[in-house]
Image 1 (cartoon, one colour):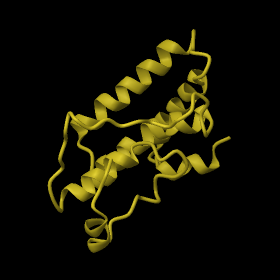
Image 2 (image 1 turned 120 degrees about the vertical axis):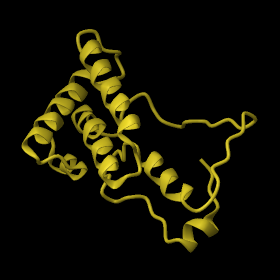
Image 3 (image 1 turned 30 degrees about the vertical axis):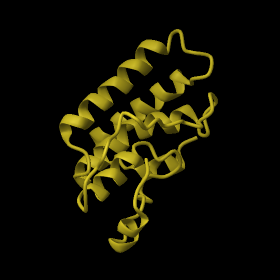
Image 4 (image 1 turned 60 degrees about the horizontal axis):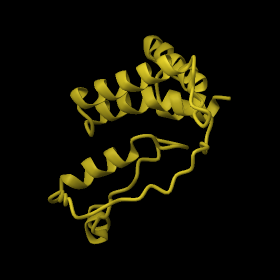
Length: 137
């Protein structure tokens, strides 16, 4: 993602600090914020390179929690619609549940599933918040 810094500075846009640690979906949130102030341009001639690693930077439990909590937070914030968030949540839950029995060696599917389940529990208790990952594990 490339952005005009004059727009970011001019409107005081920031990455949301309420999406801690892994910052799951922070790119979606930021792009929706900046879209209010201009065009989003896409070109098939551009290619992105993800410089991530196979081993995670945070625990699977924390990422799994964020996979549920962050889309709900972004729906409340109105930078993600229910039509965008629901499939995202469903895909993550399904992938983690189905692959937990035979996970890829580089993915903590069981940890992610535990995090997903904890987030759903917090949702049902009315305590779901992205910042809760700070106290997990």
